[in-house]
Structure formats: structure tokens, C-alpha cells
Image (cartoon, rainbow over all chains, first blue to last red; front, side):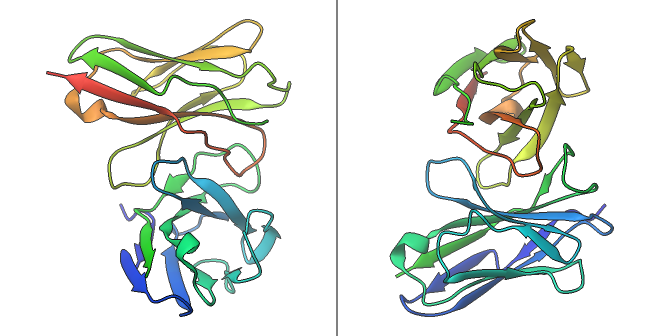
Amino acid sequence: GAGVSQSPRYKVAKRGQDVALRCDPISGHVSLFWYQQALGQGPEFLTYFQNEAQLDKSGLPSDRFFAERPEGSVSTLKIQRTQQEDSAVYLCASSLGAYGVYEQYFGPGTRLTVT
Amino acid sequence: DAKTTQPNSMESNEEEPVHLPCNHSTISGTDYIHWYRQLPSQGPEYVIHGLTSNVNNRMASLAIAEDRKSSTLILHRATLRDAAVYYCIRGSQGNLIFGKGTKLSVKP
């Protein structure tokens, strides 16, 4: 069956450019999460959606980071004026239930390199 | 700190059992214990989770101490495909708080 997909898989951006990362969750999954994973570290939570509502954005590192899920399915993570410290793998995960203890299914991630 | 404590790395021989320990001494009564693993160049993959009782599924077993301050993930027969970083996570809400995990190497 189809899992979580992310695009692009790799993105190289020059410092100062804006980027948009896409996540296609598993169909019917209510919850969607974004995580950032620096090299050699575990993933760090960025933001959480329940359907189209962004219920938690406490992990977004700055106001240059913006996420949306307008129709409660596909989500986009946008980073404005990229900086070198934004270089990381950005992971998207979805789960069937609402905020609570449900298995999360992760996509393969988008590796962002800012030069 | 909501993160758990795990050894940085462990080694196992193929087809032998592996016991991956995790300390979570400040766990609250509503926190579940989750285990995920991450193979190279892939997103994390769910392994198992539990609250108080030991849990078994097709991938692994989870043994939880009676005081819930520690737990052990048990892979009954390690294969080369089990080589990965294993994350032990405590939490009662949706977002997962990952630590650095344990890098498991499996020798043929």
C-alpha cells in the first residue's frame, strides 16, 4: 500500500532562497507531523496538524518556518530566506488518530542542503 | 528533560537475541514508552509501544520494569536487516521526543 511520500527527496538551495517541501500522508490519516533531523542526531519535532488545524507549532525554530495543510491532506513546509543552519533532513509523519498515542508512519524525508 | 537514556551503540551476532536497554527515570504515570528504529537513509519506523505491561508483536518484545523507570526492547533473533538506530521515546501526546538512540550493529 502507499505510504507517506515526500518531495523533493533532495533540495539544494542558496542561502537566502525560499524553499517548499511537500508531504503526502497516508490517505485518511488525521494527524500529520513535521520533524527536522540534523546529521547524527535524532529527529526534532517542528509542528503538528490535526486535519487542517495546526494545533502545535512550538518546535518551529524561527518565523522563517511556516507550515500548512489547507485541506487536511497534503502538507507543505516552507522555509523563507534559508540559512546554512537549516541544512537537515525534514521528515513528515502521519498517524490515523487524533492527538494521542498512535503509531506514526514516516516518509523518507527531504534532505535540504543550504550553500 | 523528557528524553530517555540509551547506550550509544551495541553489537550483536546474527541469529542471537538482542536486549536494548532504556532508562526513563522521570517518566510520568500517563507516559507511554515507544520504540522506533531508523535504517540508513530512511525515515523512522515504528517498532512497539507499551504503558505498564510487557508487550509482544511480530517485530519485537517490550519488557517494562515494575516501577516503569526502565524498559528493554528485545529482538529475539537479530538479522542483518535489524542493523539500525533504535530510539526509545516516552510520551503521552502525539509528538515524539527523540534522543540520539542506540546504534545496533549486527555481525554475520
